[in-house]
Image (cartoon, rainbow, N blue to C red; front, side, top):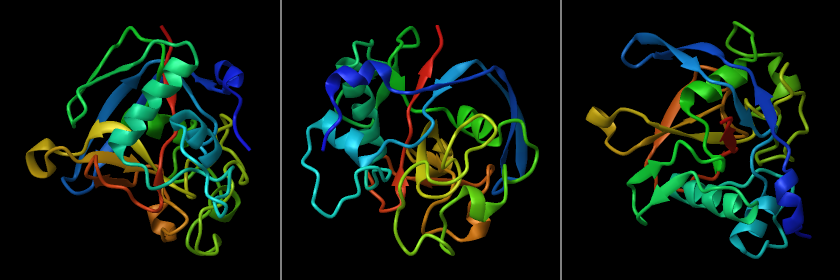
Amino acid sequence: MSVAKDSYAHYPMIKIAAGEVALRDDRKKTQWMEQVNSFMLAPVPVTNELYCAVVQRPIGSDVRLRAPVVEVSWEEAILFCNLFSRESGLQEYYITNGGEHVDCNLEANGYRLPTEAEWQYACKAGTTGYRYGELDAIAWYRDNAGGKVQEAGSKQPNAWGLHDMLGNVWEWCWDLYDVNVYGSYRVFRGGSWAEEARGCGATCRRRSHPTFRIDDLGFRVARSLL
């Protein structure tokens, strides 16, 4: 089973209204506000079915098509965004040289990773707590996932119609974590099927090298509104 290329232009996205969000770094004990412009965000993480179709990779017989793709590095997620944009007739957002250095074309309408501020703002969906709902109802995590990734969108969404913002898979964001301490390491958010309950929260921040692949780390795509 595969995704037809003529369906790429109709990939569902949800419009997120502009606003502001309070970010924090518990390691440094700092907090700051960021403005978020209106943007588009996919209602679920990128699935195995979509990822394999876009990058033209065979799907293994034991892979669940509609589960979020995992073991994709940050660099591979960036390349996917450009490929998906190209196949969808959109302008590529990222300018790459085949390494860790990536520039952005801010005038492009193509797919990209959400910024950390965009991700948290969309996750909270106007709520003020650590989570946007009761954990078992909204998230797959260590206590209910049976030790594996689950089908995307099978838990309750937040108020803005976004599924799996908490649990199922961690999600790469665009941002560097802390250049002075961790160099090129990038942020990922949201918790996963393997994470304890305390790790599945809107403000929980993790990091990894942009070339690393992790078995509970995936991503979802965003687009700018120009």
